[in-house]
Length: 154
Image (cartoon, rainbow, N blue to C red):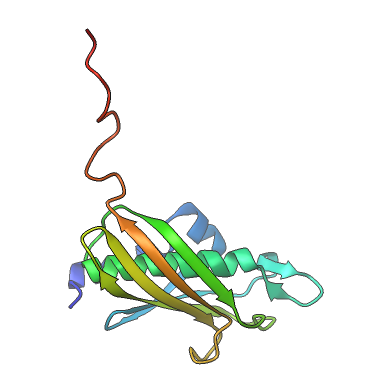
């Protein structure tokens, strides 16, 4: 069960970073262990002007970000994490002029790694634009802080 205080932070975590804010990411919902975010279609996010298809890098960023949110949801709180592995399978082009949604679920959590499945779509998760499988390393600094390996001056 997600802590209500942490759940209240999800909208800020979804769009609070400079790049997610610039891309227009918006928190949609949390249902059980599944997190959903949206990126509204904008002309400046298009990768192919002839077709109006959103840029592939945007789709990858969306899936990576929603995956991190899913790990934080599974942890029931914010901890440093980093993407360890991300595989994205593109299944079809996103439709011109349509918002893109992404959902993710952290299906396994170990003491150091969160494993996630995610998908991007317009309306129906069963008709994905892309699907992702990812792993995130937790507390990526291993509890060490900057300068932990510095030697004392002699």
